[in-house]
Length: 317
Image (tube, rainbow, N blue to C red; front, side, top):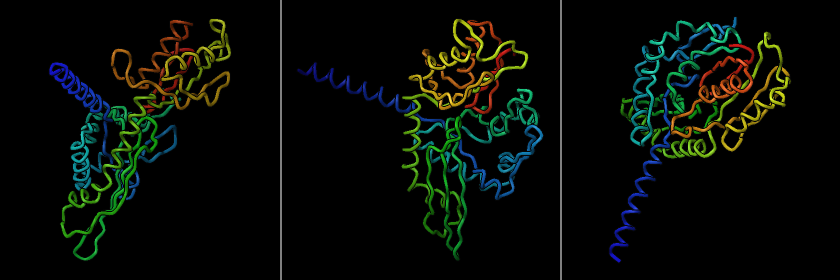
């Protein structure tokens, strides 16, 4: 009897340890950034040329260099999330990595030769590779000697830019001059609900796959089109079959298809492959690129936009 109880007790401990390790492994990686609105309101704007059109985007580098409050705010949110077991990527470090790769030197150029243009933010997302971007907006309210903070926190899926968590509110009035303390007092009451929303979203990714987008195009030099037959089926059908076989539960939506293009949306790719290696959109799409080459001798070029949008252009690299 004692042996049975001891075995049961040890088994329970082991199960608990495995469950805890699994829960920890499922935590999404976060990166805290100032919201677009905060950057625009404070004049931290960067313009870049997108195929002849000037587009405005947040200038995170200058914001970090010139606004000391931003550093304090990011540091405080990082601390609060770290205390709750969420792994974080640092915005300032990610920007330095981006610079070291000379990505900012080519902001006005598209790697695809005009097919797809990447914004500086898209390039930063590829370097940081955080699952969730936590965008923060805040304002300081002053009433005589007392101050409070009104904040808005948005959790955005870095692959789709969809909001998956949110929290907002105004903290209690206080006479403290410390911005970090005011922020903590304002955010704490909302943080557990916000984290619960983050975790629910990430649990869904584990169960049903990460949502990405895939476009199929053709070069003018390609001798056929997507309605040409390969292996007894139209090329578009062969591509759709591959997507179906390589998504979680065959989940995707073919929202548009012609002889020259296909658009797959709500494509659910696995977070990890059979060996446990993390899968990203580029790695997954390269599988289709390789399949077209090996099965049908069709060369194709793969172009990425941000983390979650892949374009395969068939006919040549």
